[in-house]
Image (cartoon, rainbow, N blue to C red; front, side):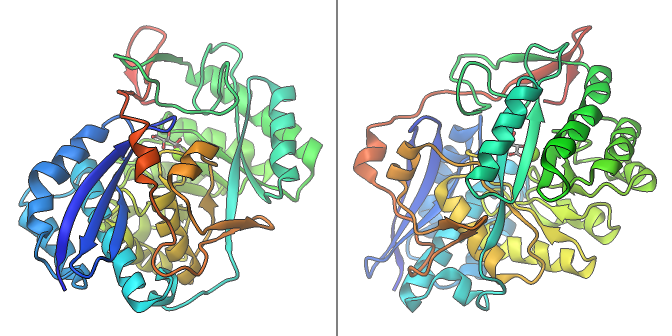
Length: 403
Ligand code: CS2
Ligand code: MG
């Protein structure tokens, strides 16, 4: 049996998704998520112009060899575009292997270590009343963990808070990125009372998370972590830009607030220092951007040595294929922590019918052979790609900052 057909399907049911489809000579189909928010077409080209021809004729069951062939064979290695493309190939091959075995992928990974994967939902509000209502709504849906993002009075727009729409979708369909303004001082003054109010409202039970989204210096993050300690957050995410582990070292030295980082990491080598030096409590790498299922397992195994748990990225720009891959890994590893579950719009679920199900605050990947996700190609074709960019962030004096 060989890989006989390979194609990249780009669709935009409300937001852009890139999906790799592999078909074996026996007609078995495998899907991989190749979505890189704001830079989708770079991955499409990497796959279509450089990788697909290399896959035709290969044995689809040689997953690791294919991973190594594509990773070491490129010479130029790592980074989001290359690794998202390789991740999609890896996930599609695991999908095929599960279908060939008649087993869900998690069974191929050693079977379930838990009944389901604890997930966290997104809540946001421009102000406290809206945020409280949003957190309540997620708790009423059955979530036991909720990420809370809130507007900052001095800032017109802030990460994680939708303005003028029901759901938050950071990538805007426009010819140029949206520009946002950032004021760390205003943010640092505003956030601790917000979580004091959330704890007063909801008590100690719900797991509350917050995403700083790469914007603080080490010292600012240490100040925030320490100020939030009385409110017992499940985690504070991306407190500093992920590429600087020394900033995290400073944060670690000053606060016991749990830290999570890694959604922008693309290989185990990106994660190595922060895992070996225990600079975080959760690692957020995803199957879509960090080397697929094969590599995600390696990252979580290294994390396990430092008692660090998984906290996979699961925003709406991780497609249902990528979400399913994360859930199969999450069900099968001993050091699962939590899975982000930013729900897709119904139309996305129609384009990507899937077996994973929400129940009692957890997601289970289902027991269909492979990943348990399909792609309705006719419906996908009705929603062509639309150029979209993630916002950029500037300080008050115009200086570019991390978004
Ligand atoms: C965020 C994402 O979900 C998260 O934790 O960091 O919304 C992130 O901004 C997007 O995935 C970027 O495409
Ligand atoms: Mg994040």
